[in-house]
Structure formats: C-alpha cells, structure tokens
Amino acid sequence: MQEQWARERPDLDTSPMGVIGRLHRLADLLHDRLRPVFEAAGISDGEFDALAALRRSGEPFELTPSELAATTMITSGAVTKRVDRLVAAGLVTRTVASHDGRVRHVALTAAGRQLVDRVVEQHYANEERLLEIFSPAERDQLVQLLGRWTRHLQDWPPGRGTRAT
Image (tube, rainbow, N blue to C red; front, side):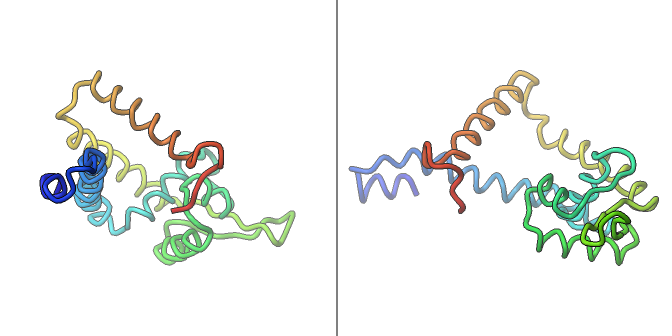
C-alpha cells in the first residue's frame, strides 16, 4: 500500500501507515493466538479478564460491578453480560450488599478460582511463546515504547484529555 500511495501521491509521507498497519495486523494475529487457550477452557477472553480481575483483587476475590468495569476497562453493560454468563456457568456469584441494597458484589466461586488459576498459567505460557523472539532487553524496550505511546494517546489531542474512538 505504501508503494502504491508513494506512486500515486508522492507528496504524502506514508511511513505512519507502515507502523499503524503492522500494529493492526499484529493485534489480529495476537488475538487469534491468545483466544484458543480461553476457548479450550470454555470461556471467552472477556470472561477470562473478569475472572482474572476478581482473582487479582485478593481475598475475598470480590468486586462491585463498577470496580470490575474500571479494572477491566469495559462498560458497565459489558460487565453485566460477562457476569451473567459467568454466573450461569457457576464461576462467579452476584450478591446484594447487606449494608446497602443498591450495591452488588461479584465474587469468584471455588470453581471459578480453580479455573482462573489453571487458565492463567496456560495463558502466561502462551504469551511467553508469543514473545520468545525478543530478548529481555528488547521486551523492556518494547514495553517502554508502547507505554510512552499509550500515555501520549491518552492525552490526545494534547491538553484536551482522552478522546473517545
């Protein structure tokens, strides 16, 4: 594409397309290679994110739906859908807080904890395989560059806060 644009519009700098296009392709490839671990466990990647967030929260492995939304960076509607599926699968419970009937809590069940503990090991082993091409120093550099870019885009346009995409 870059060569075609360079031929048709030599006045344009197409180098950003080389970076952004490769990142889009890489994101698709990563998703295709990460998803099978979750599918083999009978869950989606989004459901794994919710289970992992609850597990990372520590005892009693419980969060409110708004806390779950914040830590997984999804909307409250998406949390509701994921939690509904996880409740139906017996992996989490949804309860009403005793001190305030408006507050709900989502907690891992014993089965949910066993599943997430098993799947997280498989997931990290899979991620390790996907990154084996890079040395530890290259991984650190990549983390730094991607973090820098993320921070820049979170304040885009500069000085105007996060822009929804």
